[in-house]
Every structure is written in C-alpha cells, then in structure tokens.
Length: 227
Ligand code: AMP
View (tube, rainbow, N blue to C red):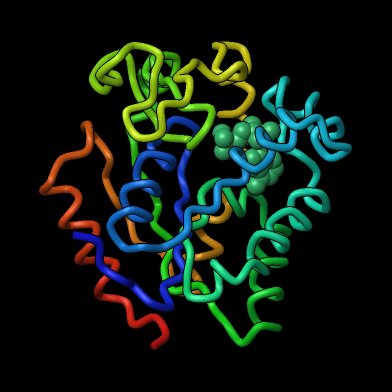
C-alpha cells in the first residue's frame, strides 16, 4: 500500500550503477514522493531536441557532467513545480559541491531543508559489467536488468508499455568516464552531507528484496520531515 510521507526531502547518492534509479523508484512508489532524476530530465530534453537538449548532448554522450549552471536551473524548475511542494526524491542531483550549495540555498529561500541523504554503497568491482546489463523504459524510466529483472514481455515496460532499451551512454568507455567523474566531483558530497548530519549509508549488495525495502523505509520514517 502506498503511504504518504509528507514533507520528506530525500537525496539518493551513489556511483553510477549503484542502484539510485531503482531505489528512488521504490521510495517514490512506496512513499508517494515525486521522483526527480536529472538524468531522466536531460534525456527528455534530448529526445525533444530542445535548445537545452542540444547543449547537454555532447556532455552526456561522453560521460561528462553537464555544467553546474545548466543543471541547477533544470532542478530549480523541477523543484518549483507544486508536485514537489510536499517532498521529493532527488536522484542524480546534486553531483558536485556547487550543486549541493545551490540546492541548500534554493531550499532555504523556500523555508525548506533536506531531511536525509541516502548513500548507496556497492562493491565497485564488477560495477561496469553489472551496469552494462541494465535496461530502462524510455517512457517512464522504470529500470530493468538482463541478469535478474527483465520485463514480462521483452522490450516492453510492465508498467507503461513503453520501449525498454539499453541507454546509449551505458557503454564501457562512457561508464569509466562517469565513474571518474563520480570520484572526482560527487564523492566529496559524502563528507559534505556527513558534516551536516544528513548522511545515512545503505548497503545495496543484492537485487532489491522486501527485507532491504523495509529496512530503508524504517530509516526514512525515522527522520522527522515536515508536517
Ligand atoms: P544518470 O541518468 O543520472 O546516470 O545521468 C546521465 C548523464 O546526465 C550523466 O552522465 C551526466 O552527463 C548528466 N547528468 C545527470 N545528472 C547530472 C548532474 N547532477 N550534474 C551534471 N550532469 C548530470
């Protein structure tokens, strides 16, 4: 059953392929919080061939981070939507210290704060191989995996009927670059949020199961949030 988790503002942090998309979706569906994934937002801009989509294409194709100013504008727009007024799950943002600072500042202006940052811990050996096996629905973003989570009908999303494909940036070369970008620019956020007493670790060492789900939901329920 879906619960309402009013006022919870959550961030999922982790290396590429650590399960941010999968767990964000589980939290979003289970707790009734909108899922805001910058990667999905950028892919939608690309697909619609908007001016922003054209600007970010080469960064994404090469596994590089999109410049902060473009990314921050995109997220501020998504957070200004009334659907995000009562909480959200941020997936793939922030990815740099300036993005985290901009987020803190933006929320402060709205009288809001982040309630919890969930750091997904994975064994990085084999991460590239595991990530190369992932698939995604191009319509709703539902993640799948050729190893253990295939849609019932090959190539078709179980939830929305959209096409299930491999992401064009899930190549070995691009993944290596994304991992480098993670270690250089995103991993420092672990200390940033630790210092602010917001960080919790979640060991994501197997396909999602009920025990992991209830452990994570108890952690989320344990933070106060806003009424
Ligand atoms: P993801 O779907 O989260 O793996 O993101 C796919 C790509 O979108 C990344 O490799 C970056 O090129 C870009 N991207 C997504 N989120 C961000 C962000 N917060 N900052 C910069 N670039 C991002």
